[in-house]
Image 1 (tube, rainbow, N blue to C red):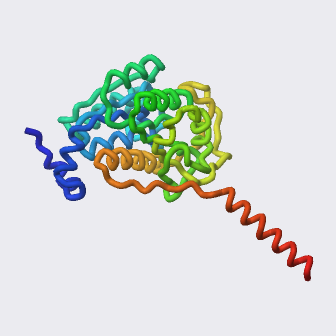
Image 2 (image 1 turned 120 degrees about the horizontal axis):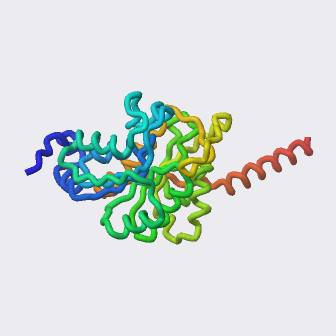
Image 3 (image 1 turned 90 degrees about the vertical axis):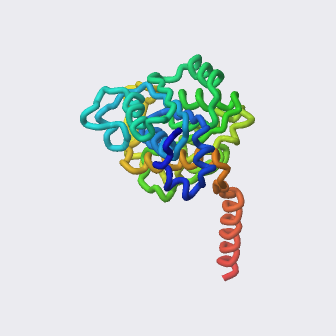
Length: 272
């Protein structure tokens, strides 16, 4: 019989029934960088009984400022391999499947159509593979929590949770929205995003590897905050707990009101 005493503090919040529910769930986490590594660990520590983690990348020195698996002692080592050891050290009874490669269209379709997942945590920071996973997951009717752009930002209080189609201010989310507009169920994707303005001066061009031509600067704690947001969506949805969904501001009404106010002020000036 499994010893779940290590989850006693969690049980105080969600009850023994909640822990038992999570033990029966299978969560897919794709992307184990600054966002995904923390999301994967938080999901594991919540007591989810089965996980599949996917990442084909290895640790680079530049990862150490924000990524959970990145240390000065493991440059060049597979992130998925490091996270495998870490997650099993947290929960030795975790049923863990590890894919140490980037998802090709064929591999992605094969994975999502042959495995039964209760939730998909999408934490990819490159547009092309991100769209591939989101599109395939939507076609399979899977619930999805997706992370938007964490680069070029520093304020965790600006993070919001809403449906992908209702995101605002985040340019990365805008790109994703446009490319998924033909998917009728894209509005079911729950997204973690930030309304903070991007520090454009932090942009740097890259060599184009891993589907990325450029990248923004990052700070240690912000991707982790995104990871916490993703894990929160996954765990609460699996438990049937409420999630506050932010409403997209009515920018058109605000713009009209501002225009009306200026017009009224102009009339007052003429009268004077």
